[in-house]
Length: 395
Length: 146
Image (tube, rainbow over all chains, first blue to last red; front, side, top):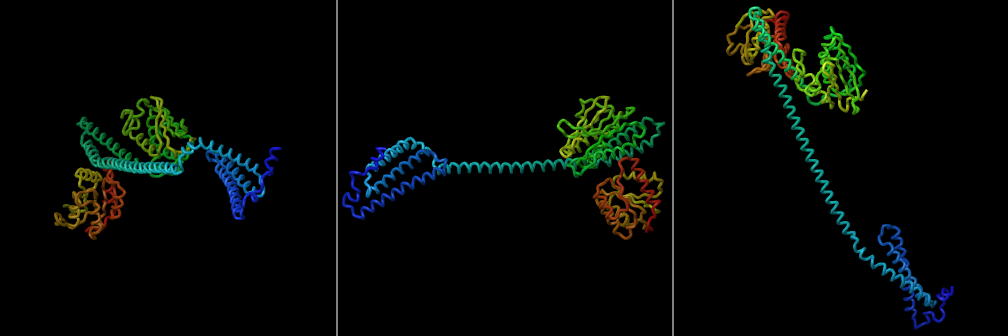
């Protein structure tokens, strides 16, 4: 308390007005200047504080606080100087100046280590330039990617149209060839038939036999050509997609095929089937071929069992199947089964050109599905197929 | 050349000619059959010009017409037959191997009376031809000839 009283003690000193020959002019210019400096030196820290508070990410914020401190302290010294004109508080002045000196040097000492670090900070201009460069590089890269994509897209499009052209040509070719083969086939069949009639089977049994074989071969070739023609027409993408009641379609196909089996005992079962999306005509062909096969290969059985249904595959797709208890086949040859004109049984055993399953595969794959078999020799076979994403939900 | 109700067969393939004629005979049809091997000859025959200028002025009661022929093709022959007042009443049966919708449509548009696709299998072929002959020559009432 004593030293504080002492600070404010003005004894021993005159007010500055009375110390020296002060003209009003000189005096007031000094006083007003000091006061203005004081005001500025108080305003500046306030502005600095406002800045620091607003920009919280300012580095070296401690330095800013020191600046505030020494500027404010310096401001107070100017206030006291102005006051001394009336109130000679030289002791207070000395104290204020001492504090200012200390804080100022503290700032100097604090600034020295900070300076190199501050110099190391990249300037805004540099940072901007770097960023701009990087952005340009990224833009260039992106433009290149876009260009490459477009080029790729173009190439894919070109290749696809080349491929589909080639495919169309091939199918057109198949169709033309098959069609052109019909005329000579007709002649072959015709004349071999007439020949057969000309030959007296009693007089020339061998000649009759040969004529018979020629005619039979020509008829087989006719069937192959017809099947090839039909097969080449089932290619391409599925023309129409409509909702099909599969169970009803199967029943329709069965009703067409059943009359030919009137003499046989067939245990025929159809599980409930969902509604699927696809081409009705093509899918009808699928069922016709599969049921035809089932009927054919179960002929040797006293009681044929043919079952149609749907089950879920491990991956959750709906697999429609036709199962028979016919002669089956060896699974070792299963992958040959779907080839065009591939057969696993002798002609004498079972009729047919071997195109039924190839057609089924073509149609199923055109719907986005796949077809496969499970069979055992003498224990029957099951043919299963899916119809891809739009094939309906598992039962 | 022949007189009496006769049939004109326009067909370029000699094997088909033989089979068709055999088929017609099988149908017990006693009519004479004249054969020409291409569309130009068919028109000459019908219009009685060129090689056929001295043919008797009797029209066939039935024309069996193939479509795919060299020189003048079947469609063109059909068009001209149906454009000619003297000829257009003669029944024309198109007998061809093409089953193309386009060919069928065009033939009917040009006025064909029937369109038959040649079956590959001989028995069917033979029967088809016999049936054609029987219908058009026995059952059908022909227009007045000449």
